[in-house]
Picture 1 (cartoon, rainbow, N blue to C red):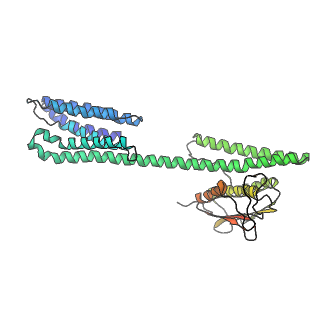
Picture 2: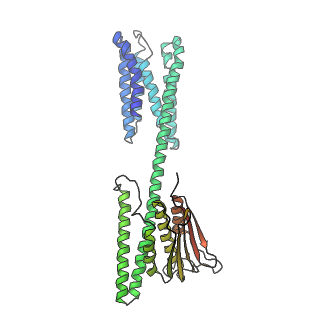
Length: 391
């Protein structure tokens, strides 16, 4: 805004400089100096607003310069009674005031700003009448100038508000992405650590203890790495990538995911990979997170399940994955506060888990179906585009 504003303020003033240099009549010189002074006040007002402070004192000072000059030019010795350059600067003051109007702000702040903008616009547009009735033909010119200045101010206000909304949208999306990542890490890795630690306490077998402790250590390292990546992204330590994604996961990590999950549940866990089609990194990452969340939900809500099947199918144009258990959906002993489902229809709370699964699929342009499976149990089925999200 500042370069355009400088040109709008100083340009007309410089046009007056030539006749002043040719004929330095006192009233013209006074008009030029007053216009430069008012332009300086306008510049200070814009700078003050850029720092988040009120620009009103400097705009009032610029308007008072015009008032003082108009009063001074009432002298019979003045060549002209209409301060041309300073009147244009007054129109610019009206435009700057218009650019600061907040449509959704409190009425006690919006109303005075609207009235001041209207008054400045009218005074600037009617300023040629200071010269007398003979100058009425110049009023339309100043009306156009004043309307252009106010219109430019309103346009700048609209652009500023749009950019502010865009920044808020970006911030909200980043927060949502960070919340998803934190939920995925805590819900899966940390929960797995807790379950493995409980298993170690129940098993007296030293060899089993060593294996469980090794899995706990590995899960803890992954959780720490992912959390550090999220924190680094939130502090802009990712070299300007602007991403809150943690260490990228792929389809190759699913085998390790299922293998690490198996010791944390009494159910037999089986991974069935069909096809060897290629999928994009974004789709693979979404598939990993969906499977991880579905497994966590099965462990939490289907403690009586005897089998959990994970199917990954890349034979078609889309990636199809399914996580299914044969549990009744009753309350897990590790989650005693959750109500049990009725035998007629197992019900699982959507919570953050199913919501997160749906969000993960939606981010890459896929769909998710969750609900009771035919024959009993619970099923999570996702269909994701192999090529990733399309523009």
